[in-house]
Image 1 (cartoon, rainbow, N blue to C red):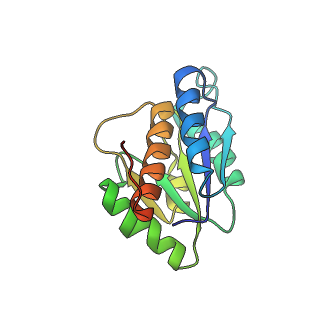
Image 2: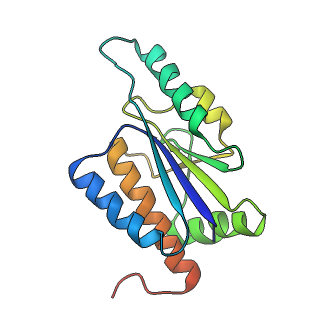
Length: 158
């Protein structure tokens, strides 16, 4: 299992998404430290799409931990995994390889700039559907928690 996780995401969560994330963060932190870093969303009323993506990319890249294995969440270019495969074929080997610190990057409404995708060691996707970035963060945390339970042989549902 990974030893530490950092989530670097565009935007600040509120309401149901913040509550869902806090719930899974509480659960995950029993097993390993998880840090959430939120960077400001670009002002899309002031900037064009390309400029906004570049601005967010700079903020995201500056906050990525240098020692982390970086996973970008990207619907278009990311690889899809089932929960078991994610746990056993992605997260477990990272810990064994000495890359136990994993940083996950989640873009805002515009997605991620090419320079962020290029910086990533790998890209994951939660499928073809477009998820709001707030929901993607909740899904990521839930899948990390599910992976912990799978790898520890613990029941997820009671």
